[in-house]
Length: 114
Image 1 (spheres, helix red, strand yellow):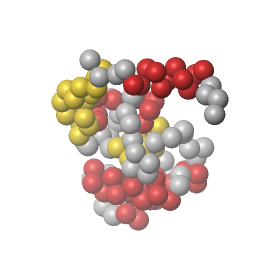
Image 2 (tube, rainbow, N blue to C red; image 1 turned 180 degrees about the vertical axis):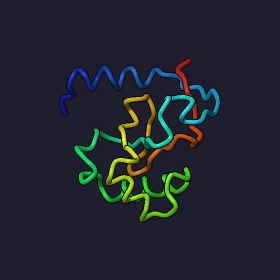
Image 3 (spheres, one colour; image 1 turned 90 degrees about the vertical axis):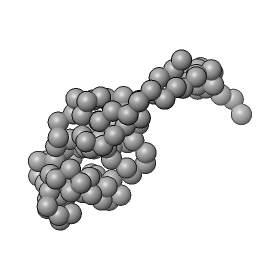
């Protein structure tokens, strides 16, 4: 298998890192996101109708957790009307896993490369 030079460079950089756990921080303190913003993995959605069901389910649960919505149904309506916004996590240097979302008061691990 032939590897693209960019993939090789990324791999070479990854294997020499020395990740060090630093502390926990709240997402709002690290990213500056507003309370009505939820972060998700992957590229931005083209609109509320394009949000995949697994991410939408996680977003609804996070909205209830944050106190943004009183129920999962209300959260879904607020996401559909864009009262609650979803943005790509990588745009603010956060890693979100698969269908998980990150909300403003969720604690995040802060890690740096020694």
